[in-house]
Length: 87
Ligand SMILES: [Zn+2]
Image (cartoon, rainbow, N blue to C red):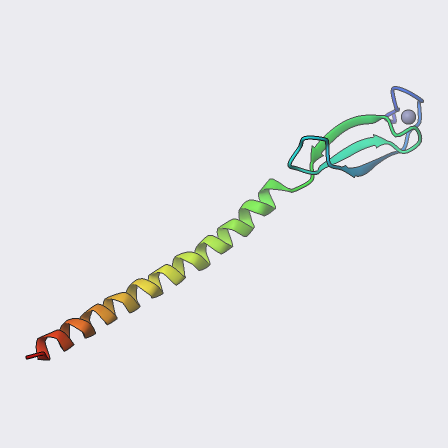
């Protein structure tokens, strides 16, 4: 049994990217390929993929912060050593 458009009985469908008015996000509108009646909508951005991207960026940021903390510690030690040599 094939899915049918509730408006025109067509059996083929398509996605169309749409940015609804007053919305900050694009949507994938699932619609009838013939009469364009909207059947449903899905988020344009895949939340799972976005979370994975953010996870990778967070890991890079975490490494950078660790390296920065190490360098600050080394600089602090160097400044303290220099301060002890001052008259
Ligand atoms: Zn239709």
